[in-house]
Image (cartoon, rainbow, N blue to C red; front, side, top):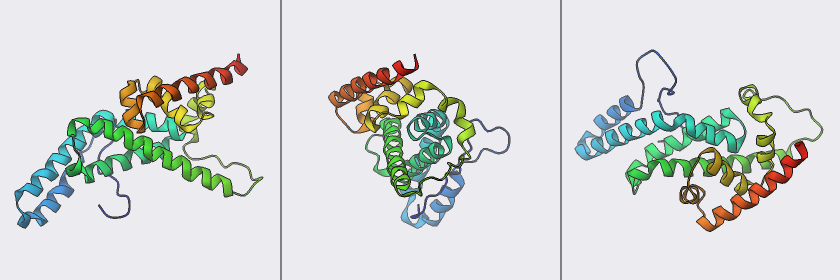
Length: 208
């Protein structure tokens, strides 16, 4: 992969018709060019291609929904997940335990979502004041979700509390899985979840 982000040539899981597309053709071309290095490199490329394609087909939509709950818009969520798959494909050789690939993907999505929110906070801090908000292209796609009092309240929580609640009650992960995804201890997961639930209840009481 080059320094710039490159889109995976996957077809979205819900697309229909047409010839299935994936990164196989690209890898075959690269494998042929690297044939002088031996067959091992080609085998690794094909293994990565097949494994990541399968992960993409099975988990793309769920990971986008997860990212959307964290970054608050579907377009950015799709980019976050796409980048996570690109990074996993490029680093497949370095993956210590392929059986934990989905866990690594979730962790990558959470980390990239944090980066998006940090960047967004900086932009908003230095944005001109007093200007009307321009509706984003993605606003309509998740408008119904954003109008939910629960989701609105969730978005007002501190980042770690929001992540813990989304991973626990929306992604239905265990404490151990949440700890891995967030890069924290299980004790910290319990703390963030408990504090988040308390804060969420306090906010939602205002709507009752």
